[in-house]
Length: 456
Ligand code: PEP
Ligand code: MN
Image (cartoon, rainbow, N blue to C red; front, side, top):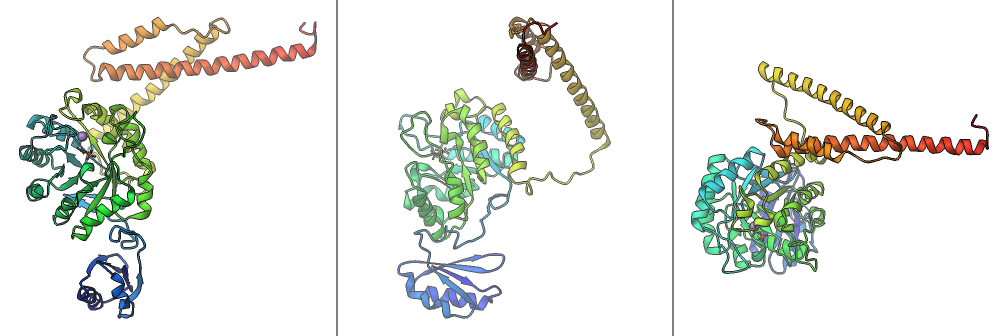
């Protein structure tokens, strides 16, 4: 049951409602909004306090039909923003990315990853120390030592950290080392653990059980909220379906569904959701597009050698590419929130360098145009109908590009750029020959219509 107070209800009126609820051995959860206060009533037989509607300052009493109350939008009409260390997630904050290794393996591994992901714009460092592995023979994590290394890497980069807690007895030590407690998919139904993290002062990242419905997941959140911890972030990480081509089926529909049902922030984990490195980027972008408040991504300095989840961990450059794409998308997603930070006057030297870059870009655009014109001229000089490309020439161009010594660009980057130029030139050629073929066909049919002999 939800008690909605009038706008401007006094503190005394609010206290009186709270006292009445508690006198009936029920619990009252205050949610103070910008306009009004809403009080959630939970416990057995809440109808016993329905008469509250006649107390001063009360506007209305609403029976919540859903089994979850505190997680519902009725209880908290505005979306919640949860603070993790110095970072806020949800309700109009920009998309937040949590990133780091599946498991903390060593000081070097976690600190190098922390530096990299921070440089690329991640807001939170992830790293498992207690790993809930399917097999008891697999790497189980470094335990407390792993938590300490994670905390050290977080402190070294200024990133808050998140790690999975697997047992209620660990909550105290986690409270000391991490900024966000993760409850993993396999533990979503562990109600003792949910109550224990509900008593923590740290926010909780609650992953969806791989066999849980959205309602069951919200009921798990309700355990945490009703134990006194209002700071819950939900994490969609894929569910088990009949489809074997991905590790799980990432249920992105859950994001807009949850936005209707709950005020809690929603994060998506495309790493566990897909299980394949190549699928992380497209699904991360899709999650951002459907309104996720954040993402959690596995990143490793040397993915093939990761001690857990090697197949789904991104390398540093792959993570960098993903962050670039997400930044582009953010302008479409939240045009207001994502406006560029107010431009501070750049130092003269910086301005000068940027002017030179603008100049180089203009020359590159002109050269690109010139190259495409030449490619089209080549196409037109070929005998008609000949679409063959000189594959050997193209390959040697790419090889020359890759071999440029001492370049600041990697061979892979240069190949990518020249590959794109070749593809663009080829499509210009195709367009020009299509136009030529069309006009030749039009001419032919016009002369056929004019009849024999008219061509003179
Ligand atoms: C993890 O994030 O490391 C993890 C084990 O995820 P999940 O609980 O979603 O499988
Ligand atoms: Mn993992």
